[in-house]
Length: 167
Image (cartoon, rainbow, N blue to C red):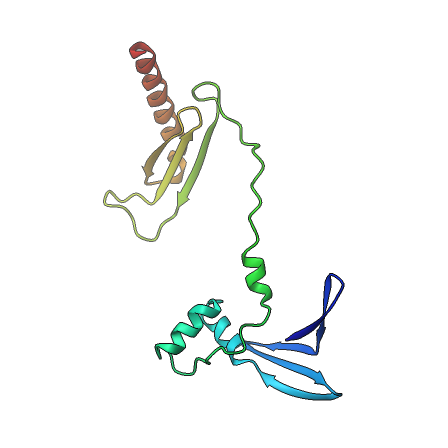
């Protein structure tokens, strides 16, 4: 697609219609519309928005049948522009625990279609925020979650007592 520069903007000449993988560009030259199917852009999209240089290399090495010679180059690709945008960081609102068992994250997974070797159909995970460690427990029934939490709590509190004695 071609355009005319007007100060800091480009006014595009013609109209682009996208239908699936084919871009049809109507150029208006001397009041006559000519239809050009942009095969370069088609292959650019088919190959996952590959660069013009790599598309030329594929053509030169005859790696894929039907790849054009890319002599005209790749037109403006909106998807490539969006793909190069930098990601915005998430706000650092996550709090860090100041002591053991102050914040515990938990998740229960199940009913699974294939049981474990000991016939467990549910799983629960506990993440203790102070140590940033994860514990994982197997369960045969979902109502066992509270029992597993009590086991987890006793284990973490005993470990913390042992760690304090060592320090």
